[in-house]
Length: 105
Image (cartoon, rainbow, N blue to C red):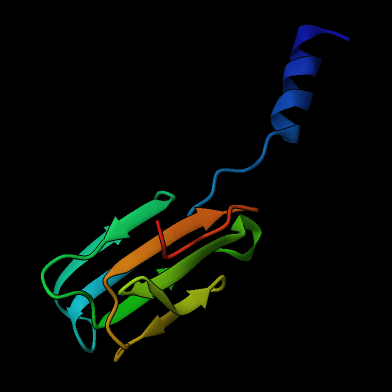
């Protein structure tokens, strides 16, 4: 095999980059201050928590969000979704693939 053929095969076998976005709003109906994340991780919501949210993702990404309040799960989504009047949220855990998402540290 030639080098270009090997490189093409390697790129074709590489996983696609995930593309998701989670946005939390401090007030209901997607109002008030907001914060957004596009990378896997655990994020604490300051200033009284969140009261509405939007999760944008593609099924091929296999990305999910776990919504937490006081160390307990209050929601879990792996498909695009939104909630204009959510129960309180003080932490979100984002990840893709087979990563376990936990509200507890």
